Length: 244
Ligand code: ADP
Ligand code: MG
Image (cartoon, rainbow, N blue to C red; front, side, top):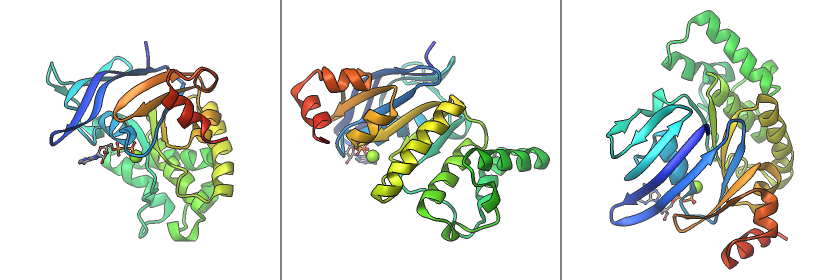
């Protein structure tokens, strides 16, 4: 059974259809990337899974749990989906220390105090920043802030990580380091990861499998090798090949 299952998902804003019959599965522990140009519907797909947007049609499940089934009127609210999320802007709360930033999602879930402190320390240890927990976000580098955002997404032990262009605010050199680090961490944790990027190179180096999207349609799903060596359409070839 796949960890993330999406079938016949569609999304309309007003009278514009931005997602069209989206179907894909992500396996347990897999690093799966949605790749495509800006505006093709990557974030909307992720947001529907996260519960930040409501798909107009379709079914979404995580493990054995159905989160959304429009036909059956099933809808699990976002705070009950047990997903960790990191966005393009890391959006740490500037007036809170790193520790308080991580405590916030645990407070919402009413985690007991003793358990909370252990979870915060463990999550920061995973990203190698336990020694900075009393600092404020502006006292950290961009790369460190992005790791804190990841620790905050991991702090309540989600079954799935959703990452929307988490490296795009970093400069090129930091991005390269962050990429290697992210790949190692994901492999160590073995956590199912759905990743969004418009960067072909990033998708090819990080992913177990890639779904290439254009205009709200998933055009091809395959391993980096399959996508690169055997593009299904001229558009995929042009887009994936354009990084070289
Ligand atoms: P991507 O993440 O691939 O850049 P998005 O999923 O953000 O693309 O957007 C897909 C399309 O949906 C774009 O045309 C965008 O303008 C449109 N869109 C996204 N969010 C909204 C919204 N809240 N209201 C109206 N249109 C939206
Ligand atoms: Mg986006």
